[in-house]
Length: 367
Ligand SMILES: Cc1ncc(COP(=O)(O)O)c(C=O)c1O
Image (tube, rainbow, N blue to C red; front, side, top):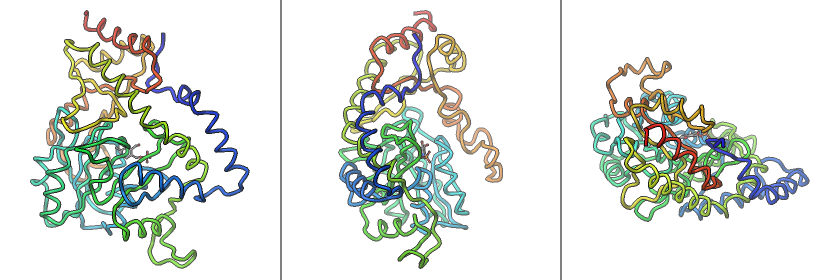
């Protein structure tokens, strides 16, 4: 039996009919950019995330870029983040001419180590971007406290964590802004690219809506230099169909995670750790072993899909040579990059498929 890392066709079998109706409605309406669907989606997402505003945009990358633009981050500024994340987190900082400053992760959750953030603050620091990796919130309290003391903005990269909870607060409701992605592999994915930014501040919400349309207000009168980051109505229609199913899908992922954690107990593997007070949405279920590459190959041969998120920490990426970091600077990120492996965790997995994956891993370790 083959088990793919992700099977979006299985999700489509659940909600495809609803999606087709909603998409047809948009196609027939002749309104393909923004529109009523997008406005309704923004309202629904703000409510879901427990914030005043959600501003839709064209991708999670743009959400980060727009959030930084709204704070006027630019050349000469530094933004602190983790090197163990998808490239967009740091790339958006660099795109604005600012400098990403990395801080290592804590090995148990793979999220930024809050204890090390203060040491990276300089007089040029403007913001901190903690990433809620794999669906679990970073430890926010110490970061928020530090930011308040130093007058820094906290932007949550919640691209992988829509619906995640930390001490009763939803991802995206803790920082000044939260950035989300609708990339199809996310828990709430579109049929293409999309994203949104959450904020509790009216002024920032207004600024973000202006910035996402070339800074125009009104149309053709440009108050600011923005970007084109409009969302299509088709993607908004898809998200509106999927949102009511999201909590059920999160529960499915949590159930699968619990299943693996039972089935893989006792093996020489580190299993995901969810910190007390956190509710992960398990965008990924990531195990860790020094024999990662061998295990991946073994599972591939058995038809089991896995992925490495992420093989090269950002401080060692070629494009960041100019930042002057070296191997050894962030040992926890470097070691995680060599040892972690994501297993299939999507909610539509059958018990047979879960068994197949866990059985193959046990077999690999001779158990
Ligand atoms: C942590 C993180 N940040 C940012 C992004 C960027 O989102 P997008 O691919 O929608 O641009 C992603 C996802 O791809 C991500 O996983």
